[in-house]
Image 1: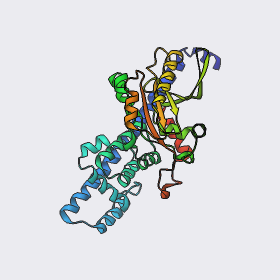
Image 2 (image 1 turned 90 degrees about the horizontal axis):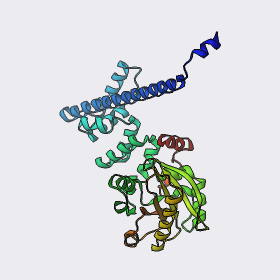
Image 3 (image 1 turned 180 degrees about the vertical axis):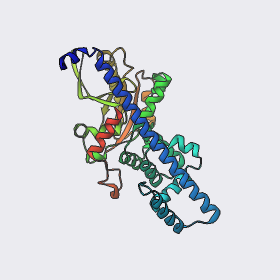
Image 4 (image 1 turned 135 degrees about the vertical axis):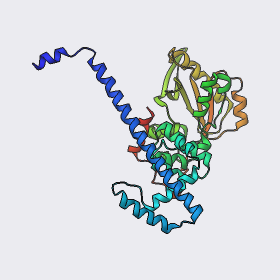
Length: 343
């Protein structure tokens, strides 16, 4: 009987099952996000009400403590009504005085993320920038904290590139926004005197950290990637594929300051990758030259007449975080979760 029932299952049943699983997963995700948004807006309403009465009636800390007691008595199953969290609600409403903006900008990320933003970021525009990035990339709270501490907003999109001249407008804007300057490799534990192969080896050993620092969308292809051109062998330091740009990214690492001839060699590698590795559906390959330091004027002159898209950034090897933050970087599990969210 079981065999007969099995034989009655249509051949397209696996496709139907996969489709329904996807729909259920998406619906549950939307429900979770909606519930999170409603809770965050409720916190805004509570904070706004407290702020308004403080301004009109001179409420103090004693009133908030009493309010916490009474609310927890009324809603014993509800978490988040402690005096400390009520103070965060007040701060949250003060930080986002327009409820509509709060609904669009920060209600889509967890409350814990908003608390981290309130604690770490004072400038409203910068706070909004991190909120939007956290939502877009699915950052965990610890990843968000690390990005704030390393001042990602000051580094993102700061590389010197020729993308505007070598890529079409939509792709050039995205490519420019993806590159940073400087890149922070403090997680390697190396001194400033480290040589290229030593740095490259350490980056491969800490690949997850390296991918996180590179940013969303980078997929590792290989290091010392072999190319044969004209009967000679050449080896690219690191080759990546970017899932959003749909193109290969050639990364060359230099232990010293930028020299104009480095751009010529990278240009050669890009031509070889485009000719021998790139699929017809892929976009033009992009080059990223990482140097210990760079003279911006020299870089701009070196890239001016090069037809292949490339950028130049500096990197730092020494630990960039203050002493009191060492040991508080994300765990391996959190990094893995972050990388999973990027897929």
